[in-house]
Structure formats: structure tokens, C-alpha cells
Length: 326
Image 1: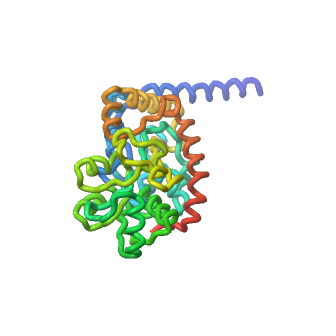
Image 2: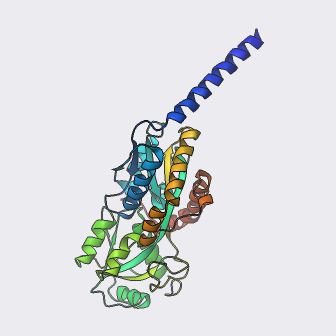
């Protein structure tokens, strides 16, 4: 009797696995929603739209961007964490949403256990910027000017926990300067106000800031990388300018809800790899200054390892800076 029960149980499990595989083979059969936790027009949104457009071709179904902003991207990520694990709701996140936010917000989800890594996406460094009228030509001059106007200089950020906010707080700490932080709802409105002369300084993703620097609308002092940025090789690195160790790379990734089937994750990952191998996409990303990770680093495992390593690096820094949610 036990043997018969075991046989029936095994058959039932086999049917479940077979039906799951069959379902995954049919995936996707309708449009996929890609949640972006930042405003339209910002650097992460721009990248997501390029990736989504090409993924749609690989998957045979549209990948539709939906911007769900709030709490430095955590509102959007939380929505994905609570979504049905069927592969039809996925999230483009970054260093901020999947590392920084866990240290400063009381999240309704766990960035590690409630989400399943799908693929690592391109990254880029940041540029330290100033409005055109700031009377400083080098980083050394800029720091001296901020100190001479202590408390009267404005520094535009994108709210607590955003890459610009953490970078600004870190910059203030390592340079022993004081300035007023002005929170905006994204990089786009911050730069608009800087171009209009309403905010003095900012630091944002290089790929987003570069067109404005190139057109002479804002000034760039340093790139937060160990090597000069290929798109703008005349901009010195932080080490060359006298601020060694101030390295910040805004890396990004694609996540799905925790229990998303492995075959579905594999299909999504394959679509990302196809996208990042496409010559047209690579050319567009190169022109923006985005750094495409090697193919072996585009896997779910590589994204998970990067998230762990960055958490171990940045959480102590965040705690030491005393950064808290608004």
C-alpha cells in the first residue's frame, strides 16, 4: 500500500512539474510590465526604455514601462515584491533601491529574500556638477568656494537614499564642507533648476548629465571612477583631482518576485543578454557612457553577488553618515 501511495505521489509531483514547464514554455503570452521606481526622463528610466524595447523583440511580447515613484524607488520595488510571481511584473532597480534603501527606510519587503535576481544591467559613474556661474574651475577651487560660503551653497539631490543624496552626504563628509541639500523628485528637475541658476551644485549619473555638460549648460568637475570616462576623457577622476577613494558606480539590475519560476527567469535573462549583445543597443549605450557588464556578469548569480558585496561596503558608510529617510 505504501508503494502504491509513493507511486501516486510521485506521479502527482511529475504532473505539477510538467505543467509548470509547459506553462513556462508558453511564457510570455501577454505584455510584461517593467516597473521603474524613478521619474520619466531620468537616467534609470532612459536605460529601462532602451532595454525594454529590445527585450520585446526577443520575447515576442511588449515590455511596457510603468513609472512608480516614491521613497527613492522603494515604492515601485515594493509593488513588484508583492506582485504575482508569473513573470509579468518585473523591476529595474539599482544601487539605491536594492542596497541603500534597506539601510535608511523601514521597507515593507526584504530586498534579498522577497525578490529574485534576473540579470545585471549597465552601470555608469557620477559627475559632480555646478551651475555655470560658480566661480571655480577645479575641484580644489570648488571645495574652497563651498567652505568660503559655508551654509549658503545649495546642493540639489533626488531625496533621501537616492544616489545623488548619498553621494552628496558622502562628499560633505569627506571634504568637511557644509551646504543646504534641496530634495527633488528626480535628476531631471534637479538639472533643470541648475541650468536655470536656482541650485548651485549636484551630482548625478554621468550618462544623464553629459549632454548638458557638453552643451555648456552646467560644469563638470570630476567623474567618480578609477579611470577617466571614455565619453568625456577630459574630465579628471576623483583621485586625479585630489579626492581618492570617492568611487561611486550606479549599477542596475532586473528583478522579479521571489517565487517566479526558474524557467521564466531564464527566459527573461536570455532576453536581457540578447539585448546587451545587440550592436545597435551597444552603440546607443556607449554614446550615453553606459558600461555594459561582460556576458558572464549578466547572470542572476552575478547580480546577487554584486548586491551582497555592495551592501557590505555601503551600509557601514550610510550608518556613519547618519542618513535617514525624510
